Every structure is written in structure tokens, then in C-alpha cells.
Image 1 (tube, helix red, strand yellow):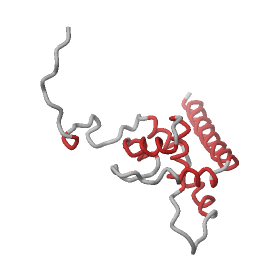
Image 2 (cartoon, rainbow, N blue to C red):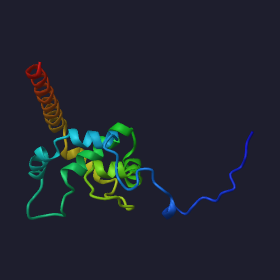
Image 3 (tube, rainbow, N blue to C red):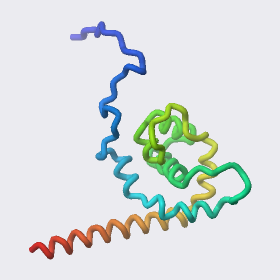
Image 4 (cartoon, one colour):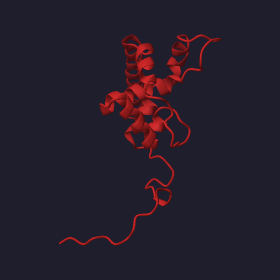
Length: 148
């Protein structure tokens, strides 16, 4: 049986969000954001730019985060930006402080990000993540050994 819902949809500004204005710490993008040592590589990324010339560059977290989103979702550059525009978790992941309805960057920026963030830098980041997680795991094992 099918019964048509007679209640009209509210306008977008009245649409209720399930997370009541707060992001869930259990969301995959929030968890991943905490795993990546963004600040450890900001300085290395900044060295790629002139201190005096040119427009201000996007921060490393936005650049790398956008590339990660694109790869993880398997989307085009334009679709990646649209996904970021629509999703507060993705906006958090790339380092925005609050949700914004306008796209934080143009899709053409991804071409520049790919040129600047090469495989060597990605490997350094991955090694740092793995080392940090191994160290954390070792500390937990040692702590358990001490308690027994």
C-alpha cells in the first residue's frame, strides 16, 4: 500500500539537521582529520611559494585534504568541489572553521595542488602517520604490561 505524504516540505533554511549544529566525532572524515599530521608538513609546503610575490596560497590542509577527498570519493575536480560545498564534514576535513555555502576554492586549484603535492611528500606523510600509530600502539601495550 502506498499513501502519499500530504505534509509540504519546509524551505531549506528550516530543514532540521540531525547533528544539531555539531559534527560527530565518530564520522570518518573527523577521524581521518585527526590522523593526518597537517602542521608537520605546512612549513615544507610553504617553501614552495614566494614570500613576496603572487596571490596568497591555500593552506596545506586545504590542498592535501581536497586531493584526499577527490581520491577517496573517486570524483572529478568539479564534483569534488561540489561535494565539499555541500558537506560540513568535508569542510571540516579541509580545515574550515565553520560551514559555508560558497565553495571554498575553484576546481582549477586542484591542478596546482597535484603539481605541488607530489608522491614523495605523500610518502613522507604516510610514513609519519604509520610511525605515530605504531608508537601509540606500543605505548598502549607497555601500559597494559605494567598493569599486569
